[in-house]
Image (cartoon, rainbow, N blue to C red; front, side):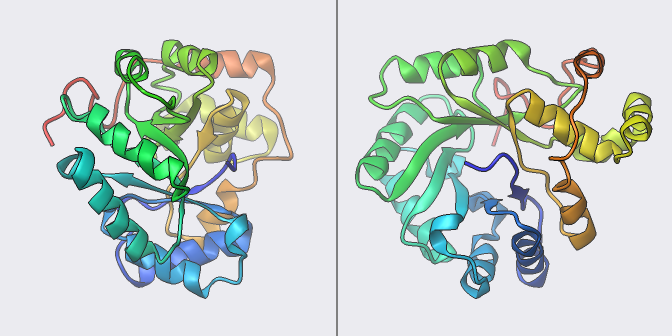
Amino acid sequence: MPWLGLGVWKAQVGEEVENAVKAALKTGYRSIDTAAVYKNEEGVGNALAEAEVPREELFITTKVWNDDQGYETTLKAFEESRRKLGLEYIDLYLIHWPVKGKYKETWKAMEKLYKEGLVRAIGVSNFHIHHLKDLISEAEIKPMVNQVEFHPYLTQQELLSFCKEEQIQMEAWSPLMQGEFVRVDLLKELAEKYGKTPAQIVLRWDLQHGVVTIPKSVKAHRIQENADLFDFELSREDMNCLDGLNRNHRFGPDPDNFDF
C-alpha cells in the first residue's frame, strides 16, 4: 500500500475527476481512493483505462456505502463498484461507516470477496476502538486498514496506538483539515523553517506517525506539491509541537453519532 494517495471526495464526475486522476498518475501517484457514495467511480475508471500504468502498479480503494450494508447487498454493491471502475479486482475495499447492527454482516461479505481474490485487502473506515474490538471478536480476518479523520487538531493517539498494536494500518482522510490548515500559525512557521509549504508539513507529519495519507485535490499543481514529501524529515521536537495542537476537533461527523 503506497504511503501517499489521491483522494477524490467531492471531485465532480467527468472531466474534473478524470483530469485529477490523470495528473496524479503522471506525477507518480499509484494510489487512488474513491467510494460508491462519491458518485465518481466511473470517472476514476475512465482515467485508469486511459492511463499507461500497469494494473499491478496501481492501488485502487473504494468503499461500500451505508445503505448497501448487509451481506447480500454488500456483494451486489461491490460488483457495481467493480463494474464502474472497470477493474477485475479492487486493491482495498472498506466499510465506509460503522452502521450499527449491519457492519458484522457486511464484514462477512468482505471476507468472502477477499477469499475469492476479488479484493486484495479489506478494511474499515471511521471505526473507533470499540467498533474494531466488536468486529474483531467475531471476524475470521482482521481489518487490514482503518481510514479515519486524522490531522493536528484530531491526533487520535489512543486509536493510532491500538491500530499499531493490532497491526491495522491507519490512513488519514481530510489530512489538510478541509482547508483549515492555512490558518494554523505553527504550520506557517515550520513551513518557513523547512522550506516547504504548510500542506507538506501536515502530510509529512502523517507519514512520520506511520499513517498513510490521501489528500484530496483536483488541481494539478497541488497534486504535484502534495507529493513532494520524501526529501525532508520533521524533528522529534517539531513533531511533538504539532501533536500539541490536538483539540479533539472533528471537521467531519463523529462515528458514534451520525445519521446517514
